[in-house]
Length: 136
Image (cartoon, rainbow, N blue to C red; front, side, top):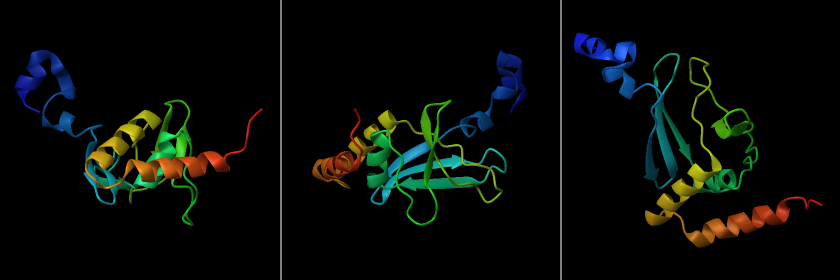
């Protein structure tokens, strides 16, 4: 942070560091949607890649199933978003949150990039809906 940043009224929340703090860069990859962020505690660069099938499930407002390594996501009721159920190597929880709407937007980006088809997503969504218990 330069003195100019401080003197212009932005205080300690100005300068080059603000671009890194609480920012997440996303990109479409063949493996899934890639989220790049930094750990809040140790500032280590982190990469979380979410495959299209998990994005589909999260986009439906559901938690993906345990794939043998524990529940991959948890739901944060207070913030209304899903968060990866993993921690940085410094043991700080990874603070990445995605809403179902965001997941659906990311799926559209993956379709546009040709990494997944609408038919694949619809097929998985139909399977999930059939496996859900009936209410009422």
